[in-house]
Length: 363
Image 1: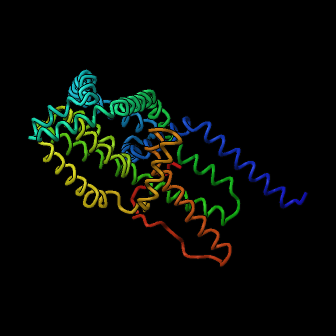
Image 2 (image 1 turned 180 degrees about the horizontal axis):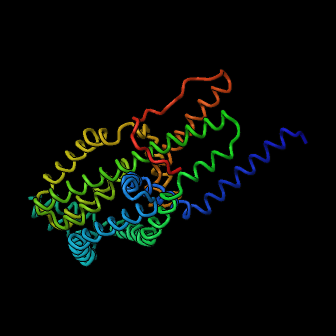
Image 3 (image 1 turned 180 degrees about the vertical axis):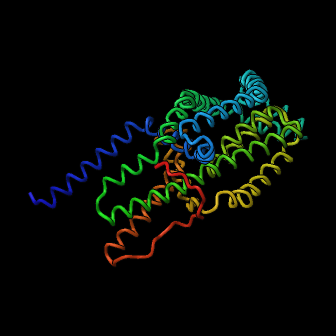
């Protein structure tokens, strides 16, 4: 057999085995990826405390203690209210679903919003005729929620894993670079490392900021306008902000659906608020906070979200965008590396990301 053909076949086989391993171990890898993102989130605070304590381990312990205190205060003051609203909605959900599937909800909503008798009968007949489909949809939603609940153990594992990345992340990166002896390849890996550090650091903080703004906006407006389960829906809307494109749409539909089923009378006002907030968030707040750290086309974003959901469920959806952006960084750096090998040295290339001071070096 030709030696070159044998090398190509061996490379393809190793690549296929690597992909197979990544798929089989995807849940473990997802836990590590979330730990890396969490480490990027708290690294600036750890670095600042380290200047005072002169000890990385002590700084990590101080920041973790502060995070535990802040979370404790949040759940002490806000958590019980969210839990009570979620419990009330859970208790009321079976009867609400029964009213929807039987078509009786059309009468209640129709009288509240001034529908004609003909419209009420048509809507009621439509819901009754699609009873099986509505029940199946509710069951699928329940299964999805159960899958999310099964991954709750990650909330404890991720901060523990992040400690190792915070403490020794820089050493991991240096060890990987030290194994590369070719200067062009080393420059390629250093460029990828620097761009990934910059992108991930900016991305995770921007997403957390956007989620906080959404939680505050949803909860405040719905609390003032007396939307049922306002705090629980606001929390859900803030969490959905982590999923680009799809998340905010699902949050808006969820809020409108719960308000409709609960008999909220001012649905038009709520709809105008949700549309207005989406415009403010997407075109005014997000561009200033996110900058150009992603530079992903909306179609690529949608593909990443759907593919992430197929591969790893809800957790894959959350990780899809940073993974897509990381692949884009690798591809652009590889293209520059190939051009250097073919045409000679070029000026140093950087992605369209604004330089950030104190960029963490976790990888």
